[in-house]
Length: 122
Figure 1 (cartoon, one colour):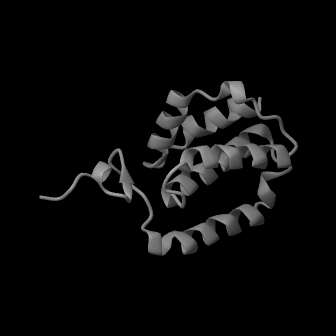
Figure 2: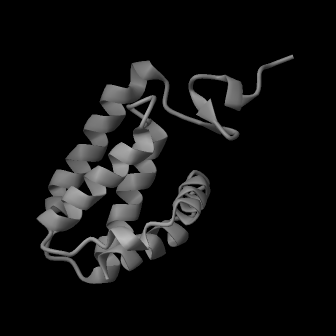
């Protein structure tokens, strides 16, 4: 009988993260996309939120940091937001909402995460 994902170092809550041997290639592809997207600068609010949601979802699936991945992603989002000339409302960060949005992003539903980002940058 196989082990549940929550007991596997590459999974959490039934979702599987990138295996370590693929992290570099996947991260390079994601950060190439970000660079080619001009770091989401000069975007309308919804376009920025959708791009940031895509970035966070992919980065979460890559899961390059085994402990503190979520905190690191939020710090990166804040820097990305400020770099794009936007404000970042720390008060809009609700941990329960953030985790729920990240979980559904695994199945490709970016709407809750994009809505969360839109609220943070409002």
